[in-house]
Amino acid sequence: MTSTTAPRAGSDRRALGAGMALSLSAVITGVAGLVCWVVAAATLPQDAVGRAAGFVSGFVLVAGIAQLNVGLGLLRWLPAAGAESGRLVGRGYLLVASTAVVGGLVFVLLPVGRQTAPGPLALLFIAASVCWAVFQLQDYVLAALGRVWWVPLFNGAFGLARVAVLPVLGAALGTVGVLTSWTAPTVVCAAIAGALVVVLARRKRAEPGADLPDRRTVVAFLAPTYLATIGTTVLYNVVPLIVTTRLGPASGAVFFVVWNGLTATDYAINGFVNSMVLRGSGDAAARPVILRAVAGRLGLLVGAGAVIGISLAPLLLGLFGSGYAEEGSGALRVLLAGLVARVVVALGVATRLMDGDGMGAARIQLAGTTLVVGGVLLAPASAGLPGPALGFVLAQVLVGALVAPSLVRKLRGVSR
Image (cartoon, rainbow, N blue to C red; front, side, top):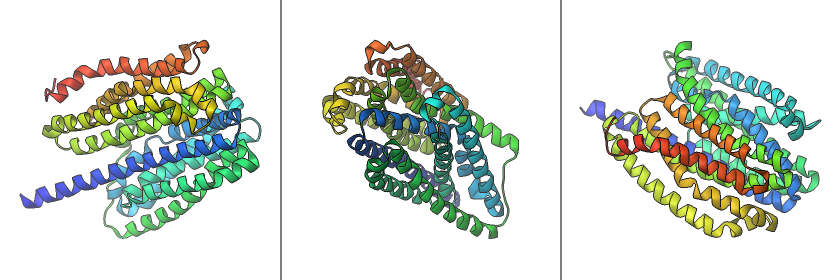
């Protein structure tokens, strides 16, 4: 009994630790991004911030699509790869980087790409897409190689570097300086992490055996979860591009700041529910208890945060400038009001992942993204920024209503 229970408990603790580290890394990245946009807003005119925001949304979108969920696959298979670790990591990097190059080329050839990254900026856009895709992949590689707590350290260093160089580059180069403040630290941090990955992968050459999945196993695991990732990636990055295209760069800058606040909160919500997935995946009997605990704490935290944010919306946006507060406070309040429904959606996705239903999780994410994009496109321009914000909220309410019945059954411990 002791020999089987103790290793399982140790594995659970390691899995939970990995989830916490990756979630902390995502939160650090989101907070650093918000700080950088505060600096950018103080350095550049509002329309210049809007153009930079559109560029950033574009290459982050391409990098997210280019991930192909390879990181999750490496997190699952790399620990047992043994002498084949280096080859597995190399293939992962090559696949993601190649996909980012193709995605970047396609984007800059589209009308939205020609508007977002005109002329010489197209080359910088493609380079930024590749660098960001590789940088994001390294989080999973380091975690899979047993260095999970290096991930938030690298992301913290990256965030500090961006904040440090942005005022200088922004003042000297304007919009291009803001973009360079993203790409230059990304290249440096990715190069350092890449060198460490090579060293760690070589150390695994001496390990006996290599348990690698076949192609069918790889596709069966990655395809459903990739669909869910696409839904989240599109949601985070397409919406501000649509708003900037429809309302112009000045209003786009305001919405981008407001939307970044929402996505940073969403990263935190997902990090919270990820711990539930890790804890509940291997223990079906404990899932209702885990779900009740996480839902109660998350609902309380998000509800309290939403009330505070709604009350302080003008003050929070005032950090970026009076124009941001005047135009964006209404949209921020609308988005914050929809966070409770967003929690229901996130819990619905998490319960399906706990049950191993990757396709069910993908359906929820894709349905939500489709409804949000549709709502943003249908919002009348005369409504200003609260229009697309309301489109997001209505989509979350609708998807949350569809998810709620099965979620209530799971909270009660009823399987069907």
